[in-house]
Amino acid sequence: MSGREFPTVTDVVTQDGIDAYAEISGDFNPLHVDPEAAAASEFGGIIAHGPIALQAFFRAATEWLGAEAMPPGSEVKVTYRAPTRPGDDVGVRVAEMETAADGHTELSAECVTQEGTTVVSVRALIAPG
Image 1 (cartoon, one colour):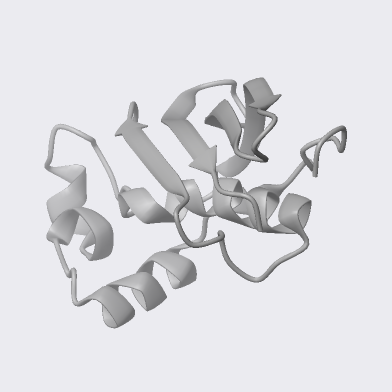
Image 2: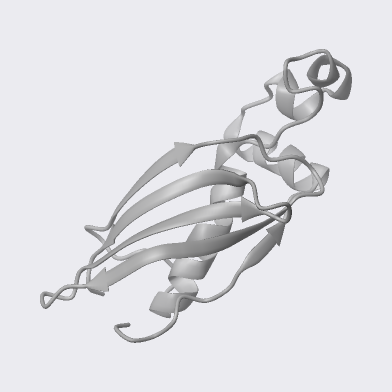
Protein backbone atom coordinates (compact mmCIF):
# COMPACT_ATOMS: atom_id res chain seq x y z
CA MET A 1 0.00 0.00 0.00
CA SER A 2 2.65 2.49 1.02
CA GLY A 3 3.76 4.64 -1.86
CA ARG A 4 0.80 3.74 -4.06
CA GLU A 5 -1.39 6.59 -5.15
CA PHE A 6 -4.98 6.56 -3.96
CA PRO A 7 -7.09 5.86 -7.05
CA THR A 8 -9.43 8.32 -8.70
CA VAL A 9 -12.99 7.07 -8.45
CA THR A 10 -16.19 8.83 -9.51
CA ASP A 11 -19.72 7.59 -8.94
CA VAL A 12 -22.77 9.01 -10.70
CA VAL A 13 -25.74 9.37 -8.36
CA THR A 14 -29.00 8.27 -9.98
CA GLN A 15 -32.59 8.09 -8.81
CA ASP A 16 -32.51 4.36 -9.58
CA GLY A 17 -29.55 4.01 -7.19
CA ILE A 18 -31.34 6.04 -4.53
CA ASP A 19 -34.47 3.90 -4.92
CA ALA A 20 -32.39 0.70 -4.70
CA TYR A 21 -30.71 1.96 -1.52
CA ALA A 22 -34.14 2.77 -0.04
CA GLU A 23 -35.23 -0.82 -0.74
CA ILE A 24 -32.09 -2.31 0.82
CA SER A 25 -32.01 -0.02 3.86
CA GLY A 26 -35.74 0.40 4.44
CA ASP A 27 -35.20 4.20 4.49
CA PHE A 28 -38.07 5.59 2.45
CA ASN A 29 -37.81 9.14 3.77
CA PRO A 30 -39.76 11.32 1.30
CA LEU A 31 -36.64 13.48 0.82
CA HIS A 32 -35.12 10.50 -1.03
CA VAL A 33 -38.05 8.97 -2.90
CA ASP A 34 -40.94 11.44 -3.24
CA PRO A 35 -40.22 14.25 -5.74
CA GLU A 36 -43.22 16.37 -4.64
CA ALA A 37 -42.44 16.17 -0.92
CA ALA A 38 -38.74 16.73 -1.56
CA ALA A 39 -39.47 19.77 -3.76
CA ALA A 40 -41.49 21.31 -0.91
CA SER A 41 -38.63 20.76 1.57
CA GLU A 42 -35.75 23.04 2.48
CA PHE A 43 -33.66 21.07 -0.05
CA GLY A 44 -35.92 21.92 -2.99
CA GLY A 45 -35.70 18.43 -4.46
CA ILE A 46 -34.61 14.82 -4.03
CA ILE A 47 -31.43 14.21 -2.05
CA ALA A 48 -29.51 10.93 -1.83
CA HIS A 49 -29.03 8.93 1.34
CA GLY A 50 -25.72 9.89 2.97
CA PRO A 51 -23.97 6.55 2.37
CA ILE A 52 -24.50 6.91 -1.38
CA ALA A 53 -22.12 9.90 -1.44
CA LEU A 54 -19.66 7.96 0.71
CA GLN A 55 -19.55 5.01 -1.69
CA ALA A 56 -16.87 6.65 -3.87
CA PHE A 57 -14.52 6.71 -0.87
CA PHE A 58 -15.02 3.03 -0.09
CA ARG A 59 -14.59 2.02 -3.74
CA ALA A 60 -11.34 4.00 -3.95
CA ALA A 61 -10.07 2.64 -0.62
CA THR A 62 -10.75 -1.00 -1.46
CA GLU A 63 -9.23 -0.56 -4.92
CA TRP A 64 -6.14 0.98 -3.29
CA LEU A 65 -5.98 -1.92 -0.85
CA GLY A 66 -6.59 -4.51 -3.56
CA ALA A 67 -9.30 -6.02 -1.34
CA GLU A 68 -13.06 -6.42 -1.33
CA ALA A 69 -13.48 -4.70 2.06
CA MET A 70 -11.60 -2.59 4.58
CA PRO A 71 -9.39 -4.69 6.88
CA PRO A 72 -10.72 -5.52 10.36
CA GLY A 73 -9.71 -2.86 12.86
CA SER A 74 -10.03 -0.01 10.36
CA GLU A 75 -11.93 3.08 11.48
CA VAL A 76 -13.80 5.56 9.31
CA LYS A 77 -15.25 8.80 10.67
CA VAL A 78 -17.64 10.71 8.45
CA THR A 79 -19.06 14.23 8.47
CA TYR A 80 -21.86 14.97 6.02
CA ARG A 81 -21.40 18.50 4.64
CA ALA A 82 -23.97 19.02 1.86
CA PRO A 83 -26.73 17.12 0.09
CA THR A 84 -26.02 14.91 -2.90
CA ARG A 85 -28.57 14.90 -5.68
CA PRO A 86 -29.48 12.69 -8.63
CA GLY A 87 -27.16 13.60 -11.50
CA ASP A 88 -24.21 14.48 -9.27
CA ASP A 89 -20.83 12.94 -10.02
CA VAL A 90 -19.11 12.25 -6.68
CA GLY A 91 -15.35 11.80 -6.65
CA VAL A 92 -12.74 11.43 -3.93
CA ARG A 93 -9.90 13.83 -3.09
CA VAL A 94 -7.29 12.77 -0.56
CA ALA A 95 -5.95 15.72 1.42
CA GLU A 96 -3.47 13.85 3.61
CA MET A 97 -2.20 10.30 3.75
CA GLU A 98 0.52 8.88 5.97
CA THR A 99 1.51 5.28 6.59
CA ALA A 100 3.09 4.53 9.96
CA ALA A 101 5.86 2.03 10.60
CA ASP A 102 3.29 -0.43 12.01
CA GLY A 103 1.45 -0.45 8.67
CA HIS A 104 -1.58 1.62 9.69
CA THR A 105 -2.47 4.33 7.19
CA GLU A 106 -4.16 7.50 8.35
CA LEU A 107 -5.86 9.66 5.77
CA SER A 108 -8.27 12.50 5.36
CA ALA A 109 -10.34 12.80 2.23
CA GLU A 110 -13.37 14.52 0.78
CA CYS A 111 -16.16 13.27 -1.43
CA VAL A 112 -16.72 16.12 -3.88
CA THR A 113 -19.31 16.80 -6.59
CA GLN A 114 -18.55 17.83 -10.16
CA GLU A 115 -19.10 21.43 -9.03
CA GLY A 116 -16.44 21.16 -6.32
CA THR A 117 -18.89 20.97 -3.41
CA THR A 118 -17.66 18.80 -0.55
CA VAL A 119 -20.56 16.53 0.37
CA VAL A 120 -18.71 14.26 2.81
CA SER A 121 -15.49 14.64 4.81
CA VAL A 122 -13.70 11.44 5.80
CA ARG A 123 -11.00 10.63 8.36
CA ALA A 124 -9.84 7.04 8.19
CA LEU A 125 -7.38 4.83 9.99
CA ILE A 126 -6.81 1.82 7.78
CA ALA A 127 -5.42 -1.24 9.49
CA PRO A 128 -2.71 -3.22 7.74
CA GLY A 129 -4.24 -5.98 5.66
